[in-house]
Length: 125
Image (cartoon, rainbow, N blue to C red):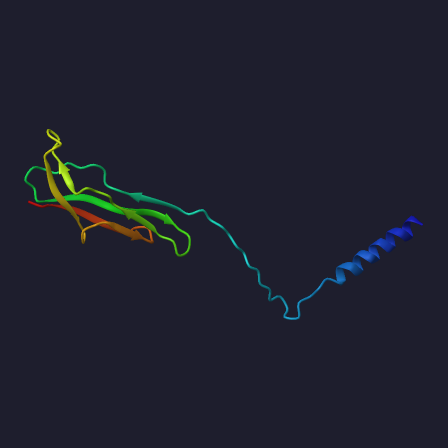
């Protein structure tokens, strides 16, 4: 009886394997894989700088998007807020007006790593 049961199980297993679905197109199949990656970025911004006395133009460094892994249709925006006055270290009540040039920098939008904005300062007398 056990032999008959084991033979019946084997026949059933063979019948089940032979009944696997087969595509009419052969082996042409497709699959969609979706992933979600957290956005990351690194922006370099110049630190505080000293402007030499009586120098009309000063290189202030570069704002640069060093690395970027952004979502589709997203960007990194860097803005500057300033009163546009240089303050004398010895007497903060003494000021000198200035502008950040690169088409008078207020903000910049970066989409890919390596994009940058070079900044200079023009003193206004």
